[in-house]
Length: 301
Image (cartoon, rainbow, N blue to C red; front, side, top):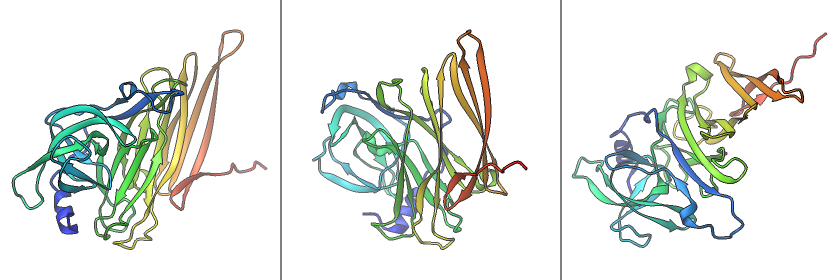
């Protein structure tokens, strides 16, 4: 297992933000069968030459594309790898995905090490930022869980294992409106100068008609003390619907100084006469204890 200094060095080997078109998907049609057909699962396919990151606490780099393949080394959350080639679709544990042969740049500058990892452990999303305001950089990743949710993990590099990762699951919108599980998600970092606190924003919006979700994840709890594991939380979750002629959308803006989120919701519904009816509502959410709680409207005199 990598020591903390080696881990930190490995994490500095790639500082590039996710590509603008990066997306992560894991989905399956709804079925009454206890064991759905693995061929029915959809998931993001990675390509040769693509740089990815280990998105789980740790995973074994194996000598062959098999769950019982010999262990070459153990990789830690956030470790950058380069895809060499894709293997076969397989079911490992509760996951259906593809095996990938990857190369890992050694933290000490030695020749790259190659091996195989299962696709559910890889992600294009890794962020480095001072998420909790303690003056130290944390590492955050996003992968899809076996329950078809986006799982955000935050690593405190200076905390000794095994308790140095906090995680939270976030709902995603289904690619099959009313008839599927899971879907796509994109992720970006919202800086503290914009929102008052540093957040991860996860957007899940299938291309076809249906629900869509925007979620914000926070990481707090260290009270500004370095080297202390905080807690990842679902700070705010907003849902909408696109089902023309009916739709429900929203916009979000932040007041950084007040640590406040302003949400404007717009609903359009078709009335019996065939005319659309548009309704706009405004909501205010105040930051407290790692989440944005909806503020009660002030009573008018």
